Length: 279
Image 1 (cartoon, helix red, strand yellow):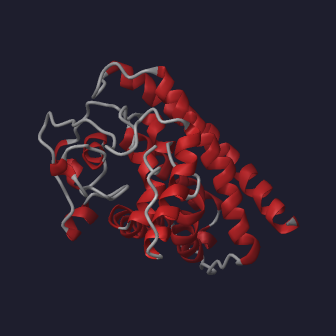
Image 2 (cartoon, rainbow, N blue to C red):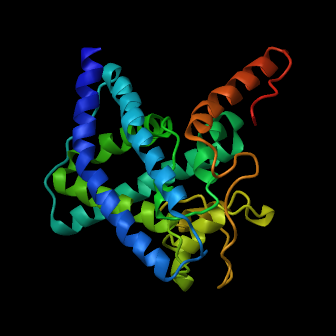
């Protein structure tokens, strides 16, 4: 218990600066969204709801991550001194590794229903915007921390504070920029780097966009693995899910994965399936 509380406080404290930067970035991008929106008439209520999810994601998610690290040590590989070019290259390779692991995990979330249960909330937003980047079920943080953070910390954790700050800044930018409600196309560059239009395709409700554009930073990964969809110039489809409404209460979204897992477990045992998953 003492170890968990120690890590939880440490992680929350270390993440405090990142949260401040994230809120500033969201505020700036939100102002741009009112100027050149992909969709008009997005309300304040949905944005505030998403910030509520952000608070849960951080407080509960970091608690879950701290519980893991209370039992599993963090292994960091020593790194030799290197010149400026190599340091820039290491930042790039760090981002590529994160995106490759995330791509595999992200595809698994869309393929396997137990994993989709905690990813569905993120996709349910019918008003995709900068705040949607943190509209995420709290269990995503410890799960992604184990799957993505552990290997990247081992390989790049010894690079120092500057390296970690730059990687965090790029990750933060990509996350918020990709989800922004901006009518913005990067043209041919969208084949190489994420844009709001490319990621909007991933959040689309339309069947022709299903399971496309999984990468978080570099769409070239989607091109390599055959999941890339290059949109038309004015293609900005509606977003959201058919099963979970965008304005569902936080309580409903909090317990929904548990109900889904319980229903799947009962089905596995041959018992009658639950009728209340979508209630």
